Image 1 (cartoon, rainbow, N blue to C red):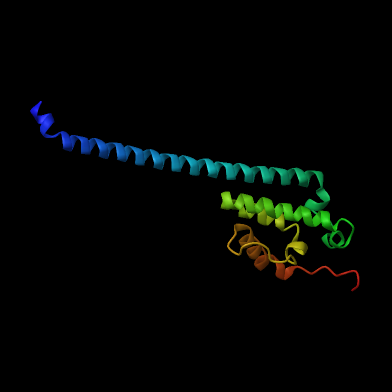
Image 2: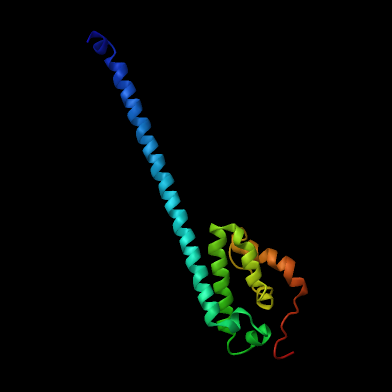
Length: 153
């Protein structure tokens, strides 16, 4: 009993230290859990966006693989076609932020739309995965693309 009385202050300090370390460990575990939940939510959102784009491509095959993109771009369906490609780019942005290895898939999908992608205005942050995808696509594909002629030409 004397030993406990003599070392009570040290035992209390050790117990407080163990409590503090346990609390810190719990906080770290909560942070890791929240980060993982956020990552999974972003991944699910990206997959949902890609799935929605696939549904759109199935319902609008004339936009997914246009026979004549220049005709689409100069015709009454130009806005719908541009929206289709914008949706593709949105899906790419979502997916590439979560899973960068999908770049080849999106390069393949963009290769159906060089007339539009090669003439689009710069958009977004230069550091974004989507903007990097567009930049690399343009570097590899756009030199061989013949620009659409306007109806006035």
